[in-house]
Length: 208
Image 1 (spheres, rainbow, N blue to C red):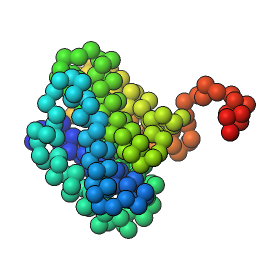
Image 2 (image 1 turned 45 degrees about the horizontal axis):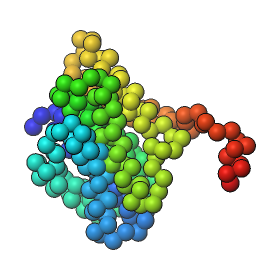
Image 3 (image 1 turned 30 degrees about the vertical axis):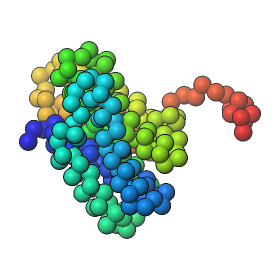
Image 4 (image 1 turned 90 degrees about the horizontal axis):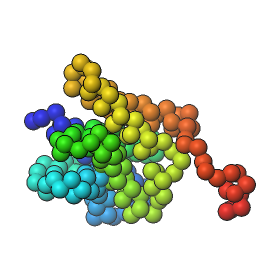
């Protein structure tokens, strides 16, 4: 089993659990929970593969379908252990975007695409599943809020390419880049960091 397949599976598990937690917060039935888990886990990767005309991974490898189902059942059974739902959702979502950023960037490299497109693919892979999840759950997608979300993925992708120009082993490049995404996201939420707003406080008050 290749390293990137392992990363892809771990990302699938993280996003599946993230989807389950969101669906359960909305009091969905078992079918709804499974659907949300599924689209969260494979939504970004599916769009990425379609854009680069690559065989859709989960359709070719049923391991991902089984992983999603297994992770969903696990999350439902141990939902009481995940007592702090918001923290659990945030944690699994953050791990998911870090792992999927790396997978997306590597898929772009394999397709011989320019670095900026590879970074865009990594960001899309990491974020789009969450966008679908939030829309289906009647939430404003995190990527469209002021929170640093996609920015963390972009930084991770940029660092990935910068480290490729060094003599650092590829495994360490993966670890460092993925860890950077997680750290940036954690720091942004912990210290309430966000991108600057284009609107003045007066404009925001007028909208209300």
